[in-house]
Image (tube, helix red, strand yellow):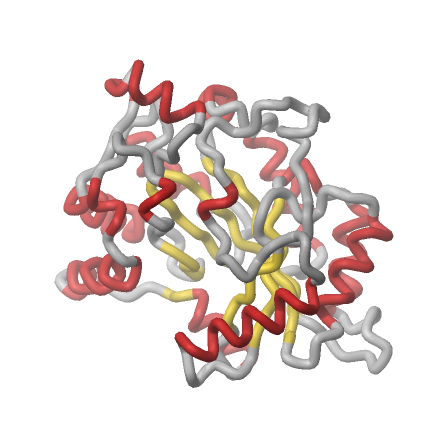
Length: 306
């Protein structure tokens, strides 16, 4: 069995692999600043997901320069880049501020486009119309079309789960945002977490049928990672029986079953999460420390036997 990687999508559509350069533009989140809540999602620690060069006290242009230097050391062949606005909710600001931030990234000569990580309750018609205008070449002075990917944190298809992890929106909110984004012809990726409290293996597998009905371009999957100091760490310590914590073999087998159910035209951005070990709770199963590329190799070996 084969799957479509998001890398393949960019190669087919744009003729090359595009390396993401992470940008911290200093955004916040309505689930943290009191607009919805002050606690944030119970599983969240954004500092675990972005590299040292990505820091909000530096300009976007500077972060791009440093990010390219970083990636040229690791990946010598990559010469085309896309700016990834990742930490927190990167549409959570007035449109004029968003325009300034996005256009600063797009002004860098090595940047082909932007990936915007955000929440489905942090977009509106005005923002989506502007993103469409970028993708159609109506923003850059020379009429150049730029790549725009909207990455929505959906996390779960079940309202009871979203409520339990203090997500601050329901699944219907995600559906509305995805449909509105699709109407504008924008590339979009949905992010989901497997292993959230209260969900069984069967319920997680059933999410494939729900995802199949969404007009997404790509999907990104993470296993639940329990970070030090988060609310979910405390909940896990008190109610461990409510969590399905996969062993490595169980997770690989689960992903094989999930991919068999998933719509074959969907592109896969990631199968699992990987963070520096210092962020992980001592309660975290140790297989979470395995390097991502090794996990992909193991999964692909299993898929060859399908």
